Length: 188
Ligand code: IMP
Ligand code: MG
Image (cartoon, rainbow, N blue to C red; front, side, top):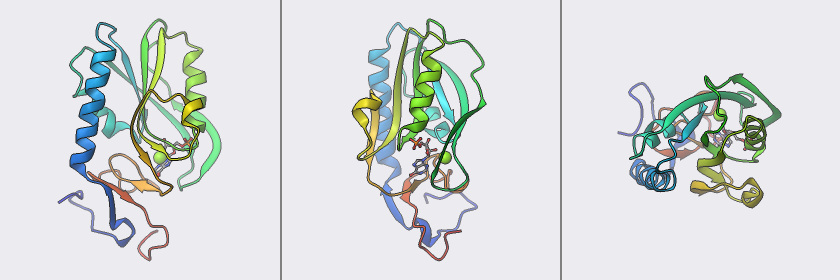
């Protein structure tokens, strides 16, 4: 059973894109890479709420090195599926990142608008280094100029939900990644 106890299987999420085991294997692999690359650096992982919370929780448990964890909440999307074009900080970090090796942990980089804003904002605080670990990156975005060092999966142009990703706050609790079908009769 892949759904949370209270969820029915809706038609609008009938299609599984990535199953839970494949996600876990990828997170393990990313954790191993980070553990190698950041050995001795005691990095700070910055989990971008709320979408990256499940990924970050799994990722830190795959690290074999000491690491710190902090959280930031920003809004770039409204409650729906389209970017609003406005990014603003809803919750800031608890601690300074000056001189720290910082890894931004993101769920999905779509247009990259959110990430560009985040990078600018965090870079201005004087970290020793700043890299991005995103579980998903949208096919066709400008990955090169976005400079994504760690990416789990390239995702086609479909809206996905599950493993922390939502549509209007729904479906974050799915263990796998599903395509959200906005034309389905059960989609709200
Ligand atoms: P960007 O600023 O266009 O890169 O959008 C990034 C943010 O939009 C992510 O952190 C997600 O919260 C949200 N987002 C983009 N695409 C999807 C998707 O397919 N499913 C769920 N959320 C998404
Ligand atoms: Mg979201």
